[in-house]
Image (tube, rainbow, N blue to C red):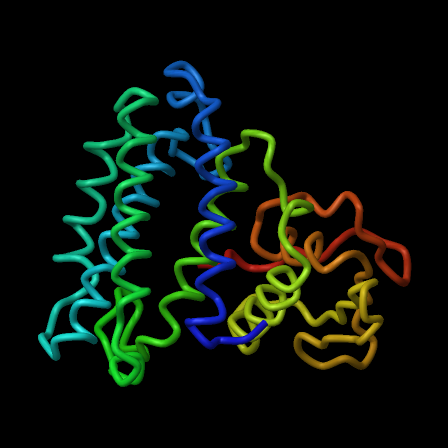
Length: 238
């Protein structure tokens, strides 16, 4: 999958539409139900997604104007916003999610070409503005699964599954606690090594299932380990 923001924008639009359709089917009771994220209801996940869009608006504005605007005022302010908004009713969650996503999309579509090369102050460190569309797409797709509302990693587009799998492997490489293993996506049969490949078990399955397991979004029940045995325990991702 390309990192070109103009190429990724239509895919982000489609992912956002899928998310909004899921949320439109949730009632107030469902919004207060548990998500896949420990300690978070679906309302917390939805509020996070809305405030994440606002944070990315801040970063696009910084890239466009040259101002030093952080993604969030502070980690504490981010957490407080999520806590405050998590208990809202379904209609308010949907309206907030839709309006924040539309604001981000409109600003992204109107960005001057040169602004995409600017460095901005994201919550996890400096990054080039051109990577923000991928960052938002990843947030939407992964947290859509976290809603535990009928959308799973199997619903991810193939290109997204392949890219997020490679990205997660890169993130985990060299991290303390990362097990040595070889992943073999069935779509490509190309082995992907995490750590030393010698004597490491091979885990085979669709890219979405491998990525879902590594990111803690699935138990990996549909994966095959060779030689036969239990799945290794990967460290927490993000």
